[in-house]
Image 1 (tube, rainbow, N blue to C red):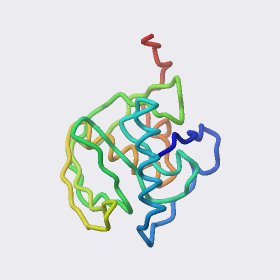
Image 2: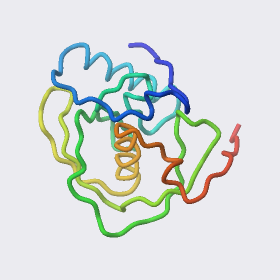
Image 3: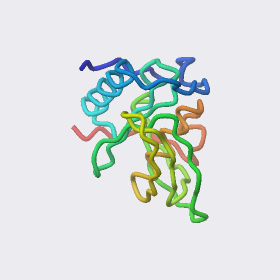
Image 4: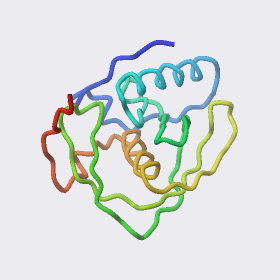
Length: 155
């Protein structure tokens, strides 16, 4: 496993609609492992492939319920209820915003072993799925934010 470099705002790959993954092989599983290491090393909740320079429909998340890789995810259901949530992004350091997100979502995806899965999510996991799914569609959270402000350094 290797820690990867994070693409920062202004990188063209962050604005592209990512390409579907057609074959899940060792190279994709190795990429998932590297993304996991990178996400944890940078204290992230999620990380999308475009953020490490790969225009692929793949993201990883650990919102406290365990690590999961989402290959070719599709959000199939969204709750009508919306809420304003604070978000940041590893690709936009030092900025936090208030973003309106659905309170719950259902996502269909393929896992790292090629098995199709369906997950219903709420809370932080639903927020992370929507945030990372935006990344693979070339959308940054600052484009959805109602308010942006400088992140306070907690160190």
